Image 1 (spheres, each protein chain N blue to C red):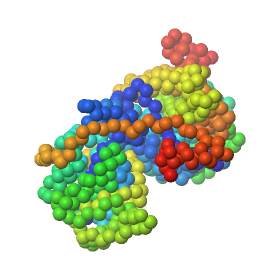
Image 2 (cartoon, rainbow over the protein chains, first blue to last red):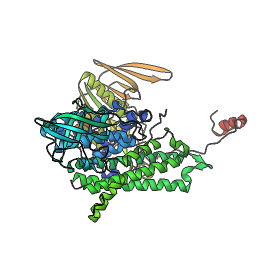
Image 3 (tube, chains in turn brown, yellow):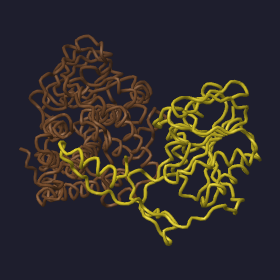
Image 4 (cartoon, chains in turn purple, blue):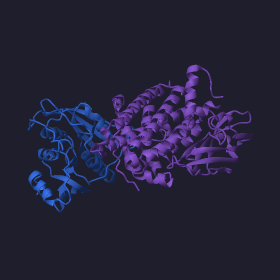
Length: 394
Length: 246
């Protein structure tokens, strides 16, 4: 089993660190040091065994990975969006599955409770979620409704002081061990609302999905609701309609746009070091033009993506980032990351397919990341709609 | 228990090293600085452990210009309570030690901890000089430190063994690998560090005892020589005459 030394050094070709505050750098370096100490030594084995390393949950909370931008009064860290992005970058530099857990907890569970929840709901759930004492998941996608979430069939009916929830959600990160689920379902008028469903409610089950070749160190499951009685106090009162879950996805996709760059940086950093050390024909393979082309293109794409997400972070801090801008960044970051993983694999030759190096794990993880939270194609159509005014979705 | 930890900055170990001003000064342009690892991982963390066990306060002090403050904030994020920066460019070991000794003489500490050396200058001098100026016991390169009442028990690695020392407090001790284990700051610590006091103290010492004449880089590594495993005579010849290792 691989127990490699983590020699990651970061990639900053355009001195983007100069644009960060000292606190940004401290937060980033803290997450990086934590990943080196806690994640790198165990991740390959966790991946091979397809086990989510649950013992890392407390550490994730301690480095601020759960709801870093949620205000301090609710247990968050009250940080800005660039800090959130940097934490996601460092976590995904370790593993996309770990970043997924933090993304779901922060943007898909804590964010809707903070943005659409009642004061009681905020106080009841957010401090525990921030501390990692409670883990959440997010139920939007259904077996027959992925890119078209508005077609969902999960629904609830009024029954006095509670509602009766029926339906099923699929591809849900954290589902098998989550304590709560933020579930999106239609009421009797067909309007989408968010409900907080708690583990232990009768008729609620979370079967684990098996057989993934991607995000193996992350637990994925289904959410099944069979006449689940949900108190009306658990309905998010602040916003309804498809825009409510899409608002959460904006926040998560923003985090992914930083995170995927982390995976790309790890592949590039590993490949660059290997190319300098690996000797063929009497010299390092880094001296050959075809390897230099790969490496030079990688660092160029990473730098472009870093500048894109940094600017997006500024816009998010100002409350001006549009959904379409976030789509562009998510799509671009994941695309360059998956290409960089594939090109890095080539530089490593045969060694690239082993777990001595992180490349194949990142590559396989990114096959999920390019599809979840809005597929690669759908994000392109969002940009298309935004610039032409013409919808090509249906 | 009142503990003072001396904190120095050091270049990140991946930095490219160049010099300026006729090779008399380290060129800091483009260099990322970190807390000197011996100060952070061992001296500071052991101080925090002692405070957690016995109560008290951990204060940090640095001699340096404003660019020291990010690394001081990190030390505060790890858990130090308060920071003092003597506003002066660090020139030589004596000047740094004299500034810190001045600060100590107008305050009161049970224990002063330093790292065993900085990883850039490797002088190992500041702790001993502070102890001499304030006239207190000193133990260097300590791998273990326990405090019991008014005495400190210190272990030091010796050639082939361990030396155990007892010092009466107040004392100065320099910390080596083994004294504690690195702590990663947590988010609560980073948030708390924002509001912890970092006070700038005017410089009072101008005297230095040494002057740097020249820095130079180590010679570039030569190519590796491969010797046929059958040819032991050639190997011995190279080791004896070229490497002068045997």
